Length: 368
Image 1 (cartoon, rainbow, N blue to C red):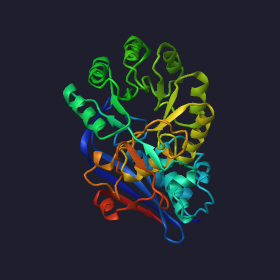
Image 2: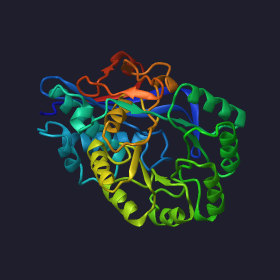
Image 3: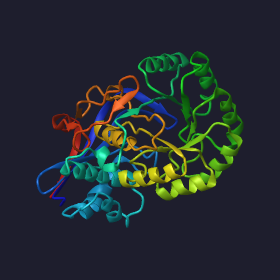
Image 4: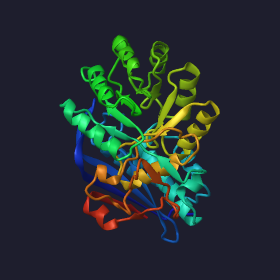
């Protein structure tokens, strides 16, 4: 297929509810959609899951826009692509910028699947027809608000509850949740808020029978995570530390954690995500798919990758209605009793609501 046209949409969408982590609170999502078209006018869509500020990783929306506009789009435009895996090699000269790369990688995968009349999940080698889903709950000022939300989500059937923690809102918060919900699958996510000086605090979390502690230490620090894991009974799950296949390989060799949270954008796209998945499957490292507060397009890519067999733990792909008054896909993503159906239609399996996309577009650029 020849890439004849690429469109970039900078989107600003108000979140239904503010979302708080150790990084801060988000009220709006400023992100980028990518659309690639072939010679027949067929479109594939991807999402650049950035935030307005470089808090999660070094990329942010305006930097990714610049990277796409000046470097990545010119490399892809007018190219003949036989398979989406070629995109990763095409972009390899440019360092990192994984979120920007992933958005075009995902759009090409979507287009590739559509040209063959198969689902994106099928194109990736997915096997599952349904996937189990958990939910991620932000930090609350009031413990009663958190307990109320945990009950709501368990009643809705979510298969796992994740709560965000940070210093000062950790052991006592988890203790309260565990006392009220002694049997739910529960995990915590620190978003790199701790150091090895906090080892005694983190060891206290062992008593609560958590599924995992996600990314307790600094992003990229595989050695300190390996040291910490030796002192904990609870498995460490790596998130911000895994940006590539080599990161995953080194983490496994060092014993830095026992679980990996796969975020497609963070590793540069579906091609790299699949490569990491295959490696972890051989090494018996459990995986699950994390969320980046995506719109329905990014959410659809998450569903597709989660259909692969080694995604053995419930992911973070909650219903669209949890985050948005109205999503930009039809139908919206709907979780029923903690499960999602993997779409069987061509590509991502959802229709893009272009009117809704344009309603939230604050900047647009076309390349032909």
